[in-house]
Image (cartoon, rainbow over all chains, first blue to last red; front, side, top):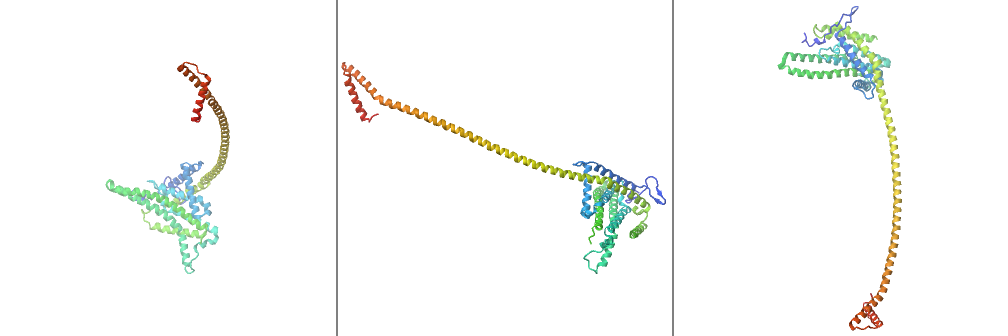
Length: 244
Length: 195
C-alpha cells in the first residue's frame, strides 16, 4: 500500500468526526499541516518581531529580510498602490512556502498538493482582485479586455481571448502550484520505490537521483510559492493600475 | 456578484466532471470526501495567520525597520557633525602649530642676532687688543734695534781693548779704540746697507 506513489496524498481523519448537519468538517492530516505551517510562521515571525536590536540576530534578520523581500516584490510588480495588500500577499507567500517546505519532510503531508486548497486560494485571489478592480475603476475595469492599439477588425477576437485568459487565471494559478507539488512528490516517491525494489546492489542510482530530486523539490517549493505570490501581485497590478 | 456565482458554478462543474472521471484509487486529490473539511480548515488557519500577521506581527517588523532606518540616519547625521567638528579642531590645531612655529623662528632669529653681535663685539675688541699688542712689540723691537748698535759698539770696543791689552800688554786709549770700532761699524753697516 505504501508503495503506491499516490498514497502520500491521501487525506484521513485525525480524531473524532466533526459534522455540522450533513457537512463533514473533521480535522484531517491536511488540517494538521495547515495548522503546523501557520503556527510555525507565527512563532518564527513573532520571535523575529519581538527583538528591536539595531544589529539584528538570526531570527530578526530572517523576519526582516522576508519582510523587505515581499515588500520589494510587491512594489516592483504592482507599485506603491498595492501597499494596503502587503499583509495579505505576505501571509499568502509565507503560507504557501511553509506548506511546500513542510511537505518536503518525509512522511509529512503536502497541503498545497491538493487542488482544492490551491483552487480556493486562487479563487479567493481572483474574486478579490476582480472586486478591487471594479471598485477602483467601476465599469471602466472592463477596458482591461480591450487592449489599445489593436486594429478594429481583430478587436472582437482579441476581446474574447482576453476574457478567456482572464477567466482562466484562477485555474492556471491553482493548477500550476498543485501540479508542481504533486508531480514532484510523486516522482520522489517513485524513485524511493526504485531504491527499495533494486536493493543494495542497484539501488544506488535511484538513490542519488532521489537526493538530487530532493534538492530540486526544495527549489521548486520556494519557486512555486514565489510564483504564486508574484502572479497575485501582477493580477493586483492589473486591477490597481489599469494599463490598457 | 452574479457573475462570480456563475463562475463558481462553472468551475465547480468542471471539477465534478474531473472527479467523476477519476477512478477510485487514482488521485486522492479528486476525491471530494474531505474537500469541504479542507476548505473549512484552510479558511480558519489562513484567516488566523493573516489576521495575526497583519494586526500584530507585521506592524512590529515594519516599526523595527523604520526605527533602524531613523537610527542609522541619526547616526550618519551625528557622524557628519562630529566630522565637521574634528575638521574645525584640526584647522585650529594647524593654526596653533603655525603660530608657534613662527614664534619659534622669531625667537631663534633674535637669539642668533644677539649671539652674532656679541661675537662681532668680542672679535673687534680682540682685534684691538691684538693690534695694540703688536704695536707695543713693534715699538720695542724698533727701540731694541735702535739701541743695539750702541751696545754692540761698546762691547766691541771693550773686547778690542781687552784683546789689545792681552796682545801688547799695554792699555790703549779707550776713546781711540771706540772711534775705530765706530768707524768699522759704519763701514759694515754701509756695505750691508744696515741691518
